[in-house]
Amino acid sequence: TSCEPVSLAESFDNYPTCEESCLATCNNTGTIWCNDINNNEQNWILTQGKTQTDFTGPDGDVNGSGKYLYIENNPQLCGASNRAILQSTCMEIQSNPSGCDMSFYYHMFGEDIGSLRLDVSVDGGESWKALFFANGNQGDKWIKHTLSLKAYDGQLGIFRFVGESGAGDRDKWYKYTH
Image (tube, rainbow, N blue to C red; front, side, top):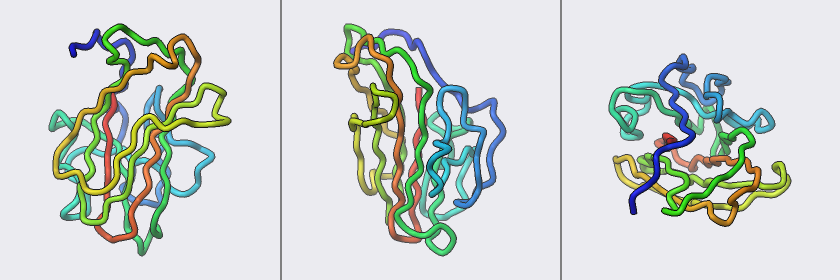
């Protein structure tokens, strides 16, 4: 299926990177996407290049040289099974005939990887419906996922990526949105 041109996209390349620590607060996540200020477990971290932990994560963003968001997991510092929530601004959802309404890239590589979920809310964040879920090691590669939002066409919605870290000490997962 061929997709229509992108009508709304976020690139993080023009924002400064954040401290690479599970305890750090990262406010440089973008204009459409930002860390959920009500979640005090962990933040998404904006970085470029390889991450600090060996045997996890990509060597760079999906294009090889830009920035991407990820979650650092070190149980000694972060604890296990933390959640990080990256939430969008409220927007009008517009579906198109191809069914190619939203796409994003994700990279889930590591021995003890957790899960990644994309949710939508059409009631101001009171309730959420899962649109996508991935769990465990998906290999050392960026994967593109595309989905239809036809069921939400014309409604105001908020999206959020919810990442849960695993219980091990070599766990990272990432995502890059278009």
